[in-house]
Image (tube, rainbow, N blue to C red; front, top):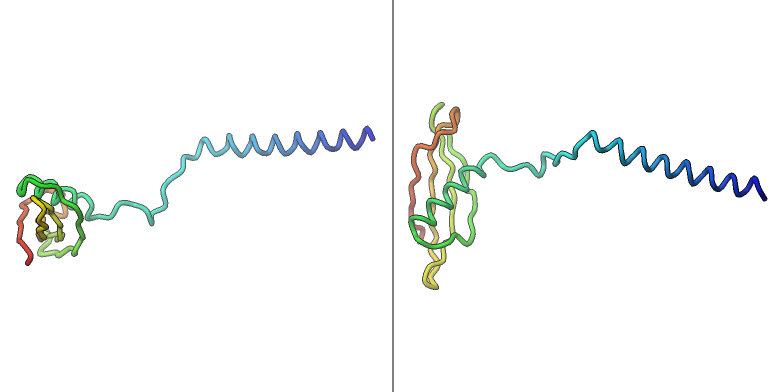
Length: 116
């Protein structure tokens, strides 16, 4: 009977010790988000497109979609977005082209085209 109780105590201590080791060993290794959830390369330009559109049209952007990137030259690239803006109970779809230098990440200009 005594050895049975001692055996149970040893198992609980071993399990507890293992749990503590696992908990403390993970402290030194911070969790990193898997690359599948990393921010896409166009996200920075999408934020700029949305902010510029909200300023230009004086209304919030309700939704947006990334259309794609076009590389024009070594120093010029474009990201295109389609934005849905709702103002005065009317919806307006706008295509925004953000032109920038892909080497320096310097913004060149932002163009807007209303889509019908």
